[in-house]
Image (cartoon, one colour):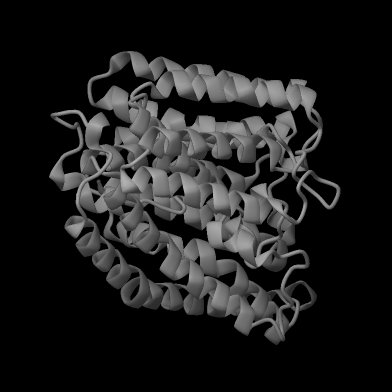
Length: 404
């Protein structure tokens, strides 16, 4: 599964470059593609490809959530602490809600982020909630249909809603949405993980996730679109492992995703059709190339880059802002000086990411696997015999992120 590591590494690098160019080479900023968004979409495809398979392989929602929490939260907390430590030099965004950061749902409950790239984690978390609900109710294998339905939902809300009702200071439940969503998720997970009322818990989790993804984002059609991309990744996995009909969802989702900006209310500049379509295409092509080469040997550098991709994704932006605050705006410096600062930034960043991967991510992932293995099984009624996910896939499945 080294090809998945390579895709994660490429995706994180795309996001890194998209944030570096405006500072170090503004003249090279691409106007026809949202490079960072393309990287995020690759992350979403990878998550869709492996997260449901991880749950199905485990066959236990307790083990799944234990593994996920130990995968995501330790480094997430490190990134938050790093940003807070840098606050005297790099002020924290206004409108940050601490409760929203407990659930990682900042982007869907009207909260700013302590670290800006964390916006994608909201959609990862919502995807986990939906996957859990589908698994518990035994409907998890209908990935293709679910992907198409998500895309249909994206078009419906894009046509009818200009802004998410939960977004902004005038939104419904503004100021309360983070707490309400936290309570609903706690109740839903408690019902599922205890095994006492799993279907009620699944209903609570699924309804909460759908409400957040439709009502929460500033641009409502983007949330369901991101989910459609993830479930398209799941459909690809099912196609690869024998469910051939699932693959038809992928071109349907692709076409609908390209059409959505034409019929929806105006959204951010990177979602205008002339930029959104190349962005979608780039993400799809990169993922397709990765799949086509999945049986080939992957260069060691790319697999290493994939392993540190979560650290790279979360830490690159606060480290970048810290460099700018300490060394000055590189746009006002001579080209050679800016190049030297860029090189120093990359050296420090990759060194830091290597350290956080080794001393934060790896130990916590191992601890999560140990704890998950010791938990009594619950929620395995939907587990099917002969899971298509083999033991050789375990490392890649357990390390899916950010955030993919």
